[in-house]
Image (cartoon, rainbow, N blue to C red; front, side, top):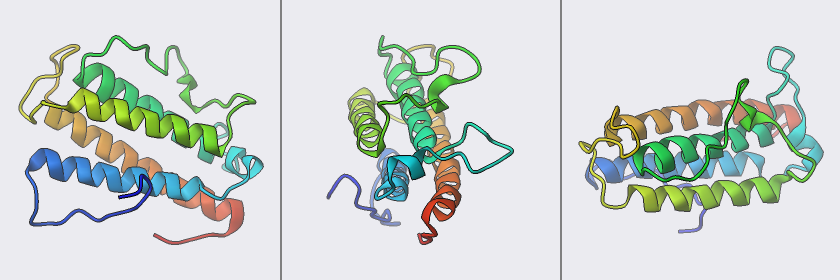
Length: 166
């Protein structure tokens, strides 16, 4: 399967971890699909007056930070640095070097780190960093966060170039 191929999870195949990670993979592919083909200018635009930091690139950078914190650091126990130190959350902010290709590449790399971090864990396991969460809860949280932001990407893509779709 290509990294950005969207495959709806089979409702009769897989244990809990498999089903959750397949839904997450579907949502990840959706997020990447929503910014693919945009120019840097379109992807960096912040067209929502009530959310002046929200751009398509910023959403994907934020989702990269979500994966790093929740899956790699909290669930997996990695000592890698958080991508959102400070407040307000800087993961939404763009640098001049950020473009569609670089932000997608970083998101895909984080996905690989997350897969390694989750390897061997079960839904019932406590997270390795703090032990305050189950892996089940963390995965459910990342699925809902990714779904929420995929919806933002739907609207941002439509505002950028009129494209609509799944």
